Image 1: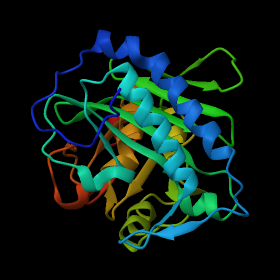
Image 2: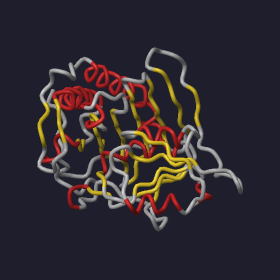
Image 3: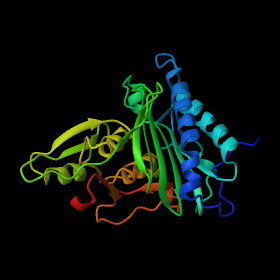
Image 4: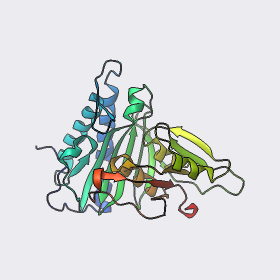
Length: 277
């Protein structure tokens, strides 16, 4: 069977909530398999190449991407995919439904020998992520959610999934917990956090920050600097499914797959409590 490409020559069908729910477990299994392929790579001996934007790519990125591509071709061949590792094939805009994938988010953390890297898979329908799966293979954890049907966290060893929910924003006098990037903290983001006196910063790599917000371990995850759609689509869906909201700095909704140059997201804030926005 021909693997999926990043092409979207004609509008794809729009997957509804019931169909997405039926895909949740097969897609979770796919993310776990991709994570296992990453862990099988010898970080001490692997080749690290540089992309045009200066970011690293390794054989682990490519191995995970191939597993996901082949798996999606088997599961839902009629739905196009947009993967960070095959972005050169993209033909936006993507209408209807498409999969948005970062096969190894946090490559810098992976190369540095840390465990803070993830496999991100999102199903986007009509420009909005409705299903998201974040696998953290080195931690043995998966966060997943379907908007309108809740979110959960599970261990890859086979334990039962645990429902999760974002928490209410801190009461007066209680500190905010802000999940922030270990590698990409910028001045605007720092200024935003500083407006919440006493805020506690939790430094993490990759999409783990979305997982922390979704499970109620952090109140906000702001990034007021550019990132890419595949970095945040899965987390967007998980946080939203868990009761939170993801917006730009002005509270407006984000759109995915429209064809913005480089699939760049100029800024975003993940709010655990939408009322805090």
